[in-house]
Length: 327
Length: 289
Image (cartoon, rainbow over the protein chains, first blue to last red):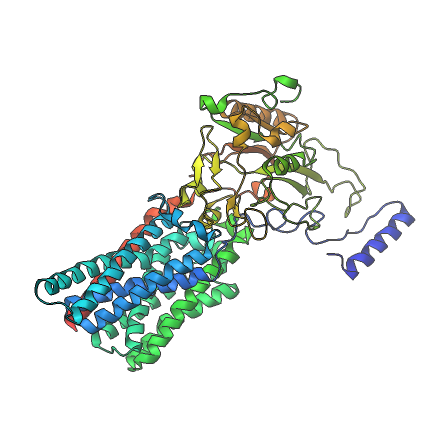
C-alpha cells in the first residue's frame, strides 16, 4: 500500500542516491515486501478456509437438537411419558426436514445433492453424515406417523397393536441414528486439516452431543414439559458443559489453536460455553428452569457459530498451521 | 533434464496411462526463471477462467496462491540470505558493508497429488478419484460442491469456485492434464517450461533425479537445498515434489503435513462414547425420577 510516509521516504532515498551515488539508510517496508516480514509466503493461508456459510452452524444446532430429541423420545416411550415422546418426535421430524434443506442450500451445486448418496464411504465423515441423516429421516417420519395414529386410536384391534409396536421400533431406530446425528458433526470438523478443529477432535463430538441433548431437554421444558427427568438431563448437560469449559481452558496449544482462545471466535465459543455450562447450572439450582433453558439454547447456538468462525480464522493463520506441526 | 532436447521426458510421447505407470512432477526452483509460462499454459489448455487481477505488492507475484482457478502458481520468494555461492554486493538496502545478502527464488507450486490424499478420502460423492497414473482427479460432473475436500487438504490446494465464474460451485484443482496424458501427451505446464524447471516423468525416475540434483546443488554451495516430499508423515509422500532452498514455511508449504483421517478413530470413539452416555443418562433420568 503506498502511503504518504512511504512516498516521502522514497523521495528521500532518491535524494540520497543522487547526492552520494548510493543509498545507505533503511528502505521502505511496503506491505509484504521487499523481504517479506509476514509468516509463511507473504502471510497467505497454508490451508484453505472453509467455504461453509451460516447454514452449517444452524444445521449443527438443529441436527443436534433433533437428533438427541429422539433419545429423549425413546426414554419417554419406555417409561410411559407419551406426551413428551410425541413432542420430542415432532422436534426430530422438523429437524429431519430442515437439516437437508440447510445442507442443500450450502452446496455449491444444490441440484446435485443426491450425489451424497452415490457412495458409502466410512473414511469420509461427510459421507457417513449423509447416510446418518438419510437413515434418521427414514425412521423419524414414519415413527412419528405411527406414534400419532397410535395415540389417537384411529384404528382398532390388530392394526392398533401393530402401530404401537412399529412406533416403538421406529423410535428405537430414530434414537440410534439421532445420537449419531448429534455427535458426528464433531467428527466432521475434527478430522480436517484446520488446526483449531483437529487439535480438539476429541472434545468436539462430546461437546456437540452434550449440547444437543441439553438443547432437546431445554426446548421440551420451555414448551411446558417441566418434569424431574428433563430437569435432571438439563442439570447433567450443564454440568458436563462446565467440565468441557474447564477442559478447553486447560488444553491449550498456544499459537496453534489461538483462534479459539483469542479473536471474536474465541469469545463466541467462550460465551457459548458459559451460557450452556455454569449459567444454567446456577439457574436450575434456583429452580429458574425457563431461564436456564433459554440460556442453554442460546449458548448451544453461539458455540456452533463460534466453532465455525474459529475454523475460518485458524485456517487463514499460517503461523497456527506451522505451530500445530512443530510438536 | 536440460540438454536432452527432444529425448527429454517433457517432450516425448508416452503410454503411461495405458501401462498404469505412476508419474509425477519434479519442480526445481534453481533453474526456474519465473516466466509463469506454466501458469499461462495451464489456464489456456484447461480453460481455467480469469478470476480477477489485483496488484499484490508481493514481489512480482500477482497470482497469490493456488485455488479453484489457479492450478499452477509461480512463487517469488525474497529472502535476506545468500543463494549458493552468490557474491553479495554492497549496494543493497540497509547495509553498506556488503553483509546484506539477498536471494530471489522462483518455485512453481502445484497440487501435490498425495500418496494418501486428504481430498480423496473426504469426498462424500466419489467425485474425486485416483487415476491409472496415480494422480488425483476431480470429476466435475459428479462434484456437488459440499466443500469438505477444501478443509481436508493439508496443502490448501483444492477450493470451491465462487460465482459468477463458469462452472461455479464445484471443487477444482490441477488435473495433472489427465486428458492430455490419455493421448500420450505431457501435462501442459511441463511441456511449456522453457528451462525444464518442471520435469514430468515416471515417479521412480523422478525421485532418483531429484535426489541426484540435491546432491549436485549441495556440492555447488547450495547448503540448504533439500527435497520437499513428506514421506515421513501420514501423507506418505507426494507425486509432485519440489526442491527447496531453506525452510518449507517460506514457500507456504506445511513442514509436516498430515492427512486428516488420522484423527477419525479418536473422534469417532468420542462420538460413540457421547452417544451411549447420552442414552444412559436419559434412560436413568426417566427410570429413577
